[in-house]
Length: 466
Image (cartoon, rainbow, N blue to C red; front, side, top):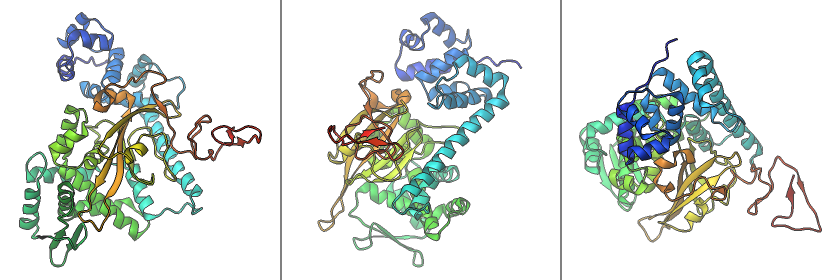
């Protein structure tokens, strides 16, 4: 097998320019001399496996685009699988490169096996937690079934996302505005629009072709409701096909999935994939700037970032969740190794709980889970007005975060000491499944470990975890 040499001079220069680095700074970051970098940038020398590994660490997203061949794609997937904390002693970069080049079929099967293992672990966790829930049975409620469907779909629905992106292109502008959506509803779909306080947030009379929107909502919410109805009508065939293929058990689950997919399509319409991904990277995922640029809410921008999982143009793998005043997680998705508790509250040390009580202020946290993986989290408390004194506003917080390896792409990581041992808050998933035995914030002991109680000694909690 002839090894393909990778020359990436123009891409390296563009990457350096994007980051505002001179050759000396870029060389220092990659651990090479300025003269060596100059030779690489002029295509006098090819990239080596060791250098590609350094690029992958320094620029986790960009390095994928440097070599777009099948071999590089395989090696990228192999690196990701090899980085799993499951492996106490991961293979070094040279070994991975040789394995990918000399045994491509074996490498592909290793990657597929690891992915199957990860999915199986998630499914087992779902069943285990359902068995441990208050109902005492593995039967899932409709909303739980839909939540799990989105999770196993990696929160990305390719067919629907591309259809919404194409529809947005027909409507024009970086993000279709209210006038464009209203015009399409009226002219293309023969829908009449009514703004009234007496029909809930949105009400559609299919027989009469009347769409009623509550004008008391924030402007971003009104626009999203219009986009939801447009997607439900213009993309009904695509949505119906996805619902049919999901094979959910109950009619209620299928109806909830239909609503969820309409919301998904509305987000994809207002924030078209390629445009949104490009702007997100340019702005280093500054949520306020993204929300202003696309005319969406802070929460909508956060949620959209968690869906950027298109195979040929992935975004930063983020986790996203929404937490209410009581600590309930009402939205959740993770494209990272972090998985949320499916029953009970989240870890009390996680900054999202503090954010709920402090609206309109962004809080940042470096956290470390029991498996040793570090995450940069951003959380913001939000208040959604009801439009009426008679209805209390909704108060909640949203959180968005990524693994520390992607901190360079995440503006909220600026100023954090990512390497210091004491810099990270030691969080867990939930007290019920957290193995930490020395946590002062533990609400109750882990369900899978014994405890010991000494009547003559008392710590923060009245037991010790075995």
